[in-house]
Amino acid sequence: MSWNESATATLEDEQVLLRPVTEQDREALHAVALDPDIWRYFVSRVDTSEDYHAFFDAALADQDAGRRVVFVVDDKATGRAAGSMSFGNMAEADRRLEIGWSWLGRDFRGKGINRRAKFLLLRHAMEVLGAERVEFKTDVLNEQARRGLRNIGAVEEGTLRSFNYMPGGRRRDAVFYSVLRAEWPGVKERLLTGAEPARTAVA
Image (cartoon, one colour):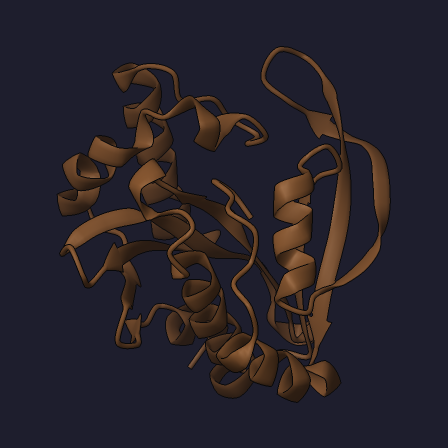
């Protein structure tokens, strides 16, 4: 079974449920997506309902084409969609993938949901897919996301300058983090027992 097939799974613990996105999730995610704090450092902007529907359409298209596995993050306590995260840039031959495209609505930040979802994704990547490297990247200006990634045990590797355009035309410097297979046991323990990461819309 290919990585794309194996990655398309339902992941859950007692607090969160991650499941592959479908058309039926459009309105539930719409209800939490129109918050400008989410998109401050995102590579696309969602200011209007039209922006949101274009963003959601692109997520479905990426998933259908095998470019990403897009997950809806459900908060079990409320039964509501909290946001979304993805597996992407899956290089199966090199045992490498990225966790990203991550966002949570305002009501779901600071509750441990980001940490739990990242744990489930990392565990699936390492223990089911057999990844040797899981990487993350964020805007060098996004101090909250950077702190959150350090708090889960990801190692900062460096900054790729002028990496891509941001909405409005700014060129983003992208800072990369990773967790390697040899580091996973320690990261796993940290995620299961450590302090909560910083409150952040995107990490």
